Picture 1 (cartoon, rainbow, N blue to C red):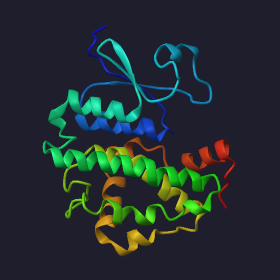
Picture 2: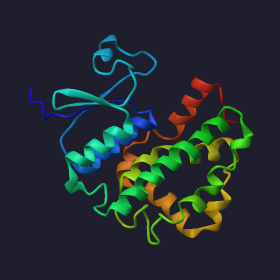
Picture 3: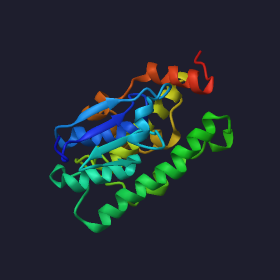
Amino acid sequence: MSDSKITLYSAVICPYAQRAVIALKETGVEHEIVNIDLYNKPDWYKDINPETKVPALNTEGQSIAESLVIIEYINDRFPEAGLMPKEAIKKANVRFAIEYFSSKVNAAFFKFLMGDRKAEGALETFEKDINASLDRTGPYFLGDKLSLADIAIAPFLLRILAFNKYYLNKYEFNAVKKHARLAEFFKGITTHPTVTESYCGDEAYTEILAKKYGIIKD
């Protein structure tokens, strides 16, 4: 078996794993996906990732864990896919957007999911706080080319929008209604082919919420 073979250990329901799936699809490189049952993880998976989390990427004689590390690795190994810009300032903008969404927006959403209604304004400030780095043209974060920013954000945004649709009476964020560019960005990344192809779907997502958190849709 060649050390260059790429095997991704994933789970269809996991947004972190979806990041890696999208990145690999964007490169067009040959790879194998092994789906792990998160509710009944096989014992052998500890040999791949001792923490037994997904995703994990096995290649070049070792396994790599953590979704952001994996998509950065994919970009570094296959730079011809253009998932990161060449300009240093644009790279910084991409990394800022990923960190901001992960630490502020997504973290607040999970608090909201668990009943902390004080977190509900987090996404409303998203447009203001990334305004300097969001490209003026769309539909993606940097304009007309998908980047790691879009890949990192899209899986979670899909689930946030699904939650709004099924549990908050199709609630629309005021920031999105007020800012056409933000609305274009949201639509662009959530309708991109490799994103929609790798998404578990709204129905599967609501089933996960019911099973894991006891949140039942009306």
